[in-house]
Amino acid sequence: MLKPLRGITVIDLSRALAGPYCTALLADMGARIIKVESVNGGDTARQWPPFQDGHSLYFDSVNRNKASVCLDFYSVEGREILSGLIADADVLVENFKPGTLEKMGFTAARLEELNPGLVVGSVTGFGNTGPLKDDAGLDQVIQGMSGLMSVTGPGPGSGPGSGPGEAYRVGIPIVDITSGMVCAFGIVSALLGSRNGERPGRVSTSLLETALNLSAFQGQKALSLGEAPTPQGNNHPVIAPYGMFATATESINIAVGSDKQWRAFCGLLGMPTAVEDPRFVTGADRSANRDQLTELIEAALSAKPAAEWVPLISAAGIPCGPIYNYIQALASDQVAALGLVQHSRRRDGSELPLLRGPLSLDGEASEILAPPPLLGEHTAQILMERGMTHDDVTRLEREGRLVCVPASVLVPETLGAQR
Image (cartoon, rainbow, N blue to C red; front, side, top):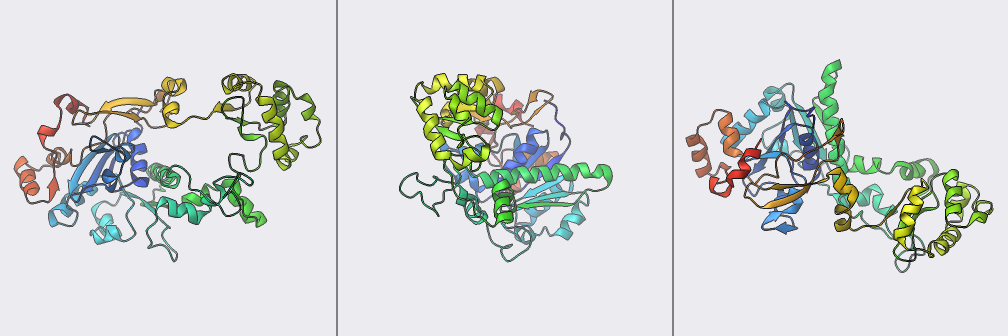
């Protein structure tokens, strides 16, 4: 695949999910990511389950195509090494609690002194100003404070606990992930800005800003109409029929988004009179009478199993699909055709299937050139590239200023993949 960010070096001080997701996307596009981790265990995600043979799969999922340097940030030697790395980089990414970078000695003035052209990308919990700017923010806390949880969960009449006020988190850390995407977009925008003389030195987003921007029409409804949207379960909040419907076997998702699709859908299900039914004539009518419409549709769908309905409805140009768990999704023919799952080996020789990045360029998909790094795996390599001797590295490791992976841990046939 083309590597449009080839030649761009990113110093990645981030940990957990939002920042590492950002730098994984940059790595997919060819940037060299030097992940600088603390000697006190490295990225906190390395300690988070699920585990496979001692490796955190949480960490592995978002740290492909990166190198790991492990330093004591607060030692004189560690700060000197980090200063040198920053001076030679194009981008610095961090998602520390506000003020942490400054405590490490890297104030805005110091960064400007080290590297006037540096782009600094930051993800915080609550933004750069306001009463909560210094507070730590985590995904679920922000999901709750942004309104996202208020529209997620079972809809009205779905059973016990489904009344107003029932809230659920999204099943993945969606705010962390999308904040990483937004930060990556901001960084690339800043790098491109040099073409027209508008290259900002700092790019920042926050979990709260990103989460509220995810609200789309739900947030706009609250802003313009003063109405708080509520959970609708597996139904689309405003379009019908659009949601999960029972068949003779398992349920499937169907999305009828236009009057043309509605007419085709009625014909396919053998309910032509529904087209002229005054309850269902327009999209607004169908949404207002959703419960009656669902009852009618599920009665028709009960005639056949899901495996028959999905191809029939899809062939009619109406979006439709089965409801998979992740094992089924990853094993699907479409995922295989896209080459989304790639197989690699960690540097210790253990096998690791990974999802590649979501972008393709000129028809060529993102690729995994290097598996997630072991802690400190590239410390010696990168420091010796910068002019340190083997003896220098050995001394600093002995003094606890850095961590290197012993050569005995690395399987020789995996070394060729190192970037």
